[in-house]
Amino acid sequence: MIFDPFNDFDTAGYIRNFRRLKDAAEVKNFEHICFELSIEDALDLLASRRTIDYETVLNVHEILFSDCYPWAGKDRNELVPHLAVFKGALQDENATIFEHPHAIRMSVDYALRLAANKTRFKERPGEVMGQLAFSHPFLDGNGRTILLVFMELSWRANFTIDWSKTNKDDYLQALSAEIKEPFKGHLYRYLSPLVVEIDSRENWPNMISGIRGLDGLDKEGMAYENLDNPQVKQIYKAYGTRYPTGPASENSED
Image (cartoon, rainbow, N blue to C red; front, side):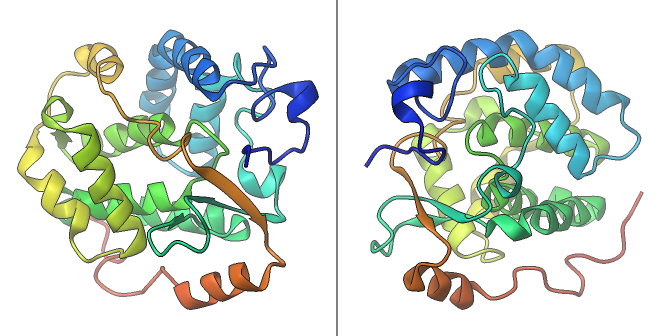
């Protein structure tokens, strides 16, 4: 099934792109060109914000992909509030189910609260990245947007991840596991050995451009289903709340 959440694939191309391209691989290349040309502007925006909030995340996406998608900077709840978006077959127990569109903002806000506890964030960076990835605010461009936001948050917590030592398949496997089972240490175990002391911002654009697999949760195998589907309702009911109170979300540290 073609990923066609707008139901206009024949006239507007894959997820409504400006070039009206229909091949997902071609859209991916177009998207990456737009991304590379806009990295520095997006990083400048993040550095200029006193507080990183949900609007900042939307702004970063808009800067990165406004030349590719007319809907850049708009989240799934604004664009397709009636659809659940997931990766894989809904019936497959290995499918990755992303946040309910109506809860995206709350989900991102929770990730930002986790990052505000700088000591815990540095010790367990996978929790923040996993929560941001689960939020999946956009129809596409999530991996790149989330990475830039995560890098800014980690900078403010005085650490960074040595992304050059990550492996695409291993990283995506750990990230998918974290999304399905948050706070079980899946991504923490993968990222923690890669935590290093803070580096200069100057080499960020080149480093980011060299990272592969950032769109691994955005392209292949993406699907959607109406929220009225009984199976979808059951899945979200089983998820329950992912925003516990307690040490993970309290006591921000400067």
